Amino acid sequence: MNIVAPLHTDDLMTWLNYWGRVHVSGIDLGLERVLPVAQTLAITQPQAKIITVAGTNGKGSTTTIIAQILKEAGYDVGLYQSPHIYRFNERIKVSGVEATDVELIDAFVAVDQARRDCGLSLSFFEATTLAAFLVFTRRKCDVWVLEVGLGGRLDVVNIIDPDVAVITNIGLDHVDWLGDSIEKIAKEKAGIIRPYIPTIFAGQQPLPQAIQNQANICHAPLYCYNQDFFYQNNSTTWTFSTPATTLELPQGKLATHNTATAVAALMVSGLNVSDDALAQGIENAHLAGRFEIVNLDGKQIILDAGHNAHGVEFLLQQLQVFLCQNAQYTEVICVFSMLVDKDIEAVTTQLKSHIKAWHIAALETQRAASIEQITAHLHDAIVHTSVNIEQAFQKALKTLQPHQIILVCGSFHTLETVWESIAHVHE
Image 1 (cartoon, rainbow, N blue to C red):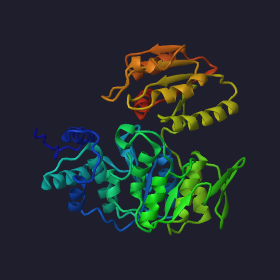
Image 2: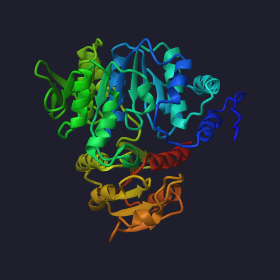
Image 3: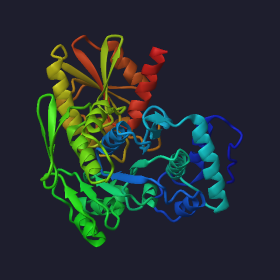
């Protein structure tokens, strides 16, 4: 099937739909196809410092904090993250500002021409990642901060050699693609390590042998949480320390653990970052969909992208703090759905004791878990079903009591739908 590129359109969504149809598979790990296209675009050896962040959880927060601190330090920073929650443009930012539709379309035109010249197809993720790298190249960014989308070794982000590699943690996620054990997944994540570059491992579990092995092979200096860097929360501040350094820093909006990981990465990067830039970056860093609190006509809604056991564990820690600080709220109503390839049992098991009632629906994607698959994990719970997440959210809003809040979680797709509904109210 020959799909015609939308070369003469100024509509970003038309291009995004095009990239969703060009390749036969939404996920297609491997660098064999994408590398020739990247080389044709001349983006594989950027004149910039590269910080690549892989891991199961915390990548979004860690990359956001690194980029914000570097912006405060005066660098032009390209930040690439995925997936987006509300707008595709969220994935590609330069110094905190999203790439424009026109900028992205220009990049897509170039990527499409390069892949045609090579006689290759690209998946949605591959094409959009190459477009991000082209934007950063054209904008002459000083530093690229890159979040690995899936795995590490075979992820398209890994066509770029980093100057600092960060692995936030290792958990059982994407097991169909990455392997069914911590060590197998760790081996994939460790694929971002390069010879002689500093590598941060911020997992709160013991260092996986696969990461140690890859660091040894590459002679890469390895800095581990709770061994080479530490942190301690205080009331309004927190302390970051290494055997040689102690810093007192302000509390930010994002998890202290991820903030400490970001600081550790910058400490070994060789970039010039002042204590003031560290403090300002930490205070100003924020990320959509990470315990994001929205007031909708006096009703409190919390949106969180947690979709695996580790992410939900942190969500619940933040939820307990919120409820302690806002004692008028005593019950949580959950608008919820998940993808079928996620561990629904692990997520619902953690959430169940904190939720008064559930409003669920199937997501509008091929990977969606069905209502039956979700309810199978909600034994003895109060469950209300709807035909879609929009309806589930509206039902929750309509019946919400003054002592209740709404928690939206389970998937980026769940948040996206609810945010569109909220945005429509605010129009």
